Length: 363
Image: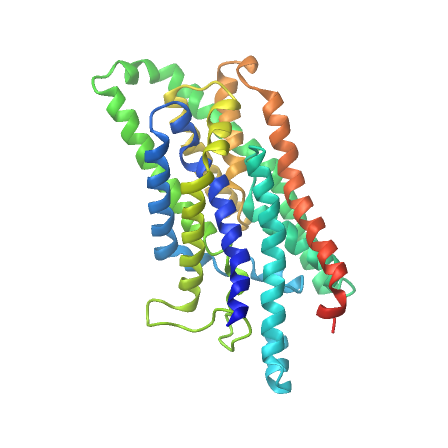
């Protein structure tokens, strides 16, 4: 049973994600003092778990294609061969160790970035670690693997630019229109304070639900065996509802919720208050712009994107409505460097580990 201790790496990844991604849901609300920090983290934790329980299992297989191509997840052919040769237990151990390595490399990277108050993408750090592992182990002499990996890598890198720019543009338009035509009317309304608070709570709760839905499975997905043959840690169903993929999602959601409750304030204040000067209404529109960008990116590109990047882009777009001087480009520059460096560092760590352990995994 000691093999299940390897699951701790995925749970650590989820905790790191929770410390970082809480800012995406309530960073602007807390920074503009519409919602108290304690209230925000409780709502986020509850809604993350709800999203994980109800819909988190749908995202379990998001990383399967690139992970299989990069020799992190055992292919169906590998499983069938292991079953025929009687080496399934060995394959299972190696699969668990690979997942441990990927999540450890990504988790350490995200934790360090969070400590430095940089809002980065845990999902991109995971992807970077997978690519780093594959650069050593994957068979790039196979044209199919080469083509598939290059396309996925280029799409992945393109989101560094398209996602925050798209969010900034949408946010700029929304904030400009509201300021010009609606803001004075809204702020003069009776009960404005209650209205803006309720709006923030609803938008933030929905954003947190999305984090649970989209990211909970990602932090533990590599421990899930979709073949049901027991090639990885979690493959057994416990009832009609608590299937293996849902159990994976719930474990991921729980680890994210713990991260939110324990160590999320540093990044939340960076996103909400250090990048640009924004009003209460601007902050609400930032959340809407970020959510809309993520939705459009998913529809147009078909790959998950970083909510952290979309939120930061949206905050900058909102700030630019008030003039260039209202945006702290010094903070943004440091964050942009972190966007690129976090998957790169995670990939480099994974590559180094792959090099050091090649004798075991290549056997």
